[in-house]
Length: 216
Image (cartoon, rainbow, N blue to C red; front, side):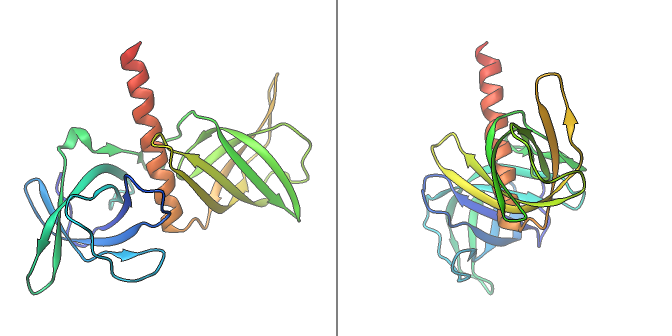
């Protein structure tokens, strides 16, 4: 894969309980190595110095609105007119596309807390994507179709890491099934950091699903 110069990359530590992640831009690429400017912490908003050998989950969204995610490692630093950090770029087959045009939904249960008009609810979603979710309504609710609600989503990763995403969402519709009631949601005003958490969670879940399919 060729990374376009100027592409915004989000890096999240693979082995860390910290909520901190980093933003950076692609400066150059040579074969299976790409170079970034010094990243900025989304927690402190300060320039950070990544240690050689550190491993990260990288994600970005290209010009076609396709999200990509892959694992990478810091290979070293480069002293030049613009100080750079070298990162490994995996082969194309190890770079996962999360969505095309619309975010792909992953069928997996996640806990979702909802706030609407100072009332609080706790639900479980039957699927999740970086653009929305479908929650199972196990109780009567005050909100209806087209209402805007506030949601907090719990994302448990396979490495025991847990991220919390807070965003606004629009209720697309309320669907009555034989056994339950479903409310599809569209996320609104999701900041870039939370969106990347969602992208990486979908990436994580898709890998788990593939592993289970391989076993069986």
